Length: 318
Image 1 (tube, helix red, strand yellow):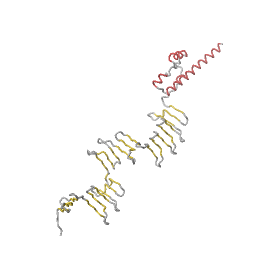
Image 2 (tube, helix red, strand yellow):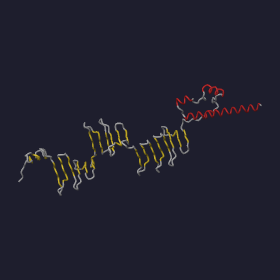
Image 3 (cartoon, rainbow, N blue to C red):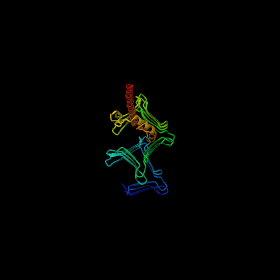
Image 4 (cartoon, rainbow, N blue to C red):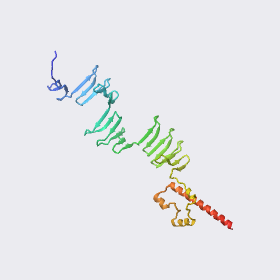
């Protein structure tokens, strides 16, 4: 015989209902009236494998030889969220769903978004700066990614901040060293070929079986300045390099030696050569200055040839 009951109450010795089963609403309430509501599920050996603890508001799954799993399915009964107690993993998405995890602030605005569809992690926004802080075992922050300022800080809290870039086989090719303020680049043999020292304020290029070279290029990618450590030379290239060949043209206005002497007496420097005051005020264009010196050498050659002619004429007259 089946007896139909809409509600069933279980009373404690004081006559107070501590478990209520309501068939109308489909609810089960455990606890209250001075009692903590617990629900325990046992395995075949009588071990607690699921515990809903009303006193501490906790839910415990697994143990006693069992891995605790929570699987949440979509309308097609496909798992789209899996909390795996055996491996300690949380997997969201799959089976036609993109796994997203969104965290909101007190105002309900999403400030952290783990996007499984795009493979992105977005932090900040909605009035919040996205920061990532990594601490050491003493709870000292040693790495800080600051979304507000766009900075990455490594070190501090008793640690020197170092950053290593390695190859696929684990060889360090670039090292940023925070203690001495150094940048090092290594070749395949592990030798330093590029070194910037913040402590000494020096830059070293080459070494380790490599000749150090520095190139300066223009907007078209053309080398305009080349420093060659192997040859020990500095080369200036490009259309801006104009030799002083015009000095040997027939119409070149070569100054008389008397005019040069007067100019030197008045200005205390050679014509077309910047003065000491001009160099101090405006700096020195080595490219232009080198060509100016070449111009003066070529002018000196013309003066020498003229003097040679005059000497030969004097010899003939005598």
